[in-house]
Length: 150
Image (cartoon, rainbow, N blue to C red; front, top):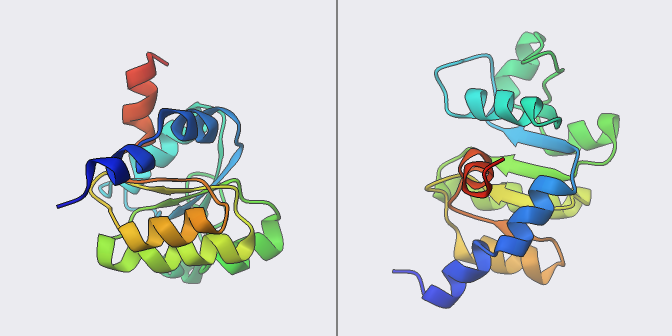
């Protein structure tokens, strides 16, 4: 079980508000053209909130088709090299696979990391925040905007 102190840290309202309000470009790890996957409606919602989404999905990148009007990339590094600054890396992967994307986000200089509902990796949270990158885990931007009434 997770400690209450850690849970409060990764669900810090100030960090959540900062990532929702003060960012523009969100790389969405796991986003493809499969509208049945959770990443798809969340990415559409991010676009509706004025965010630019950058799909990160090796399969979608290989197909070469746009995803929600944006070019997909195989890796975060590929996206950062072409797009430039990525404000938030939003991760739709199982907990055991998500930590590597937090590490990659730090490597590319992303402004924040967001692990979706049900995605928790305390060690990745510590590594990321120790590197000075704010991080949120185990929630969804749609939930948080709803909580605020946005």
